[in-house]
Image 1 (tube, rainbow, N blue to C red):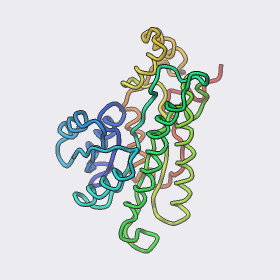
Image 2 (cartoon, rainbow, N blue to C red):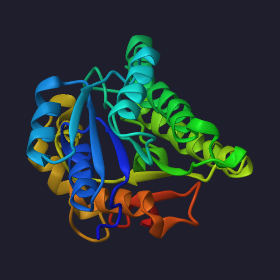
Image 3 (cartoon, rainbow, N blue to C red):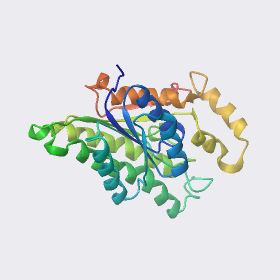
Length: 267
């Protein structure tokens, strides 16, 4: 029996990278996974690769109507969701995000996806998980929300100003949602995951910022990681799987770094 056998899961931004790895691990452990992805081609490809109960729904995390439609579609197909992974995010709209070079339009574009998208996910996720009254009113309920933050939400990142600010907001939002749900007796846990240097398309995008030598940047960053190597998408996915499972039943409001020790590195 899988670790999330029979549970109904939604993963946003599941068409590539960590989102795809997360959807894959949840499906491997028995969950019925909805691939909520803006890019129809990549989202459909992941759903087809997973097979079984996996389904793709095109979704824009920035739009409230899209969240309402997503939750309605999941409820119609599977029922009340048990797991929501707010993974969708963007790095930047321009090459440089230093203070002087960050335009307001870029700032707002990053916050719209990375902060407002997670806010809407938590809002509609909690509502869907407490459908039919939820535990607060003696009915069925409970669930797990895992929000994707970043090591950039834990330490300063002057070259990624808008992105770092957005991920810090996700960390704090997660704690507030966790306490709110716990005090209301909803049985919903909410935690955040903070990847460091991970081999994904976004990781490559970070290294390419500023039109510098990406290979040289990778080599430079690897030296700074205490464990001496970059992580893989599945490393993050396995942590998300744990937090989404009943194994983490007494864990809420936690910020979990997955960074090879980078966030605690001294010197």
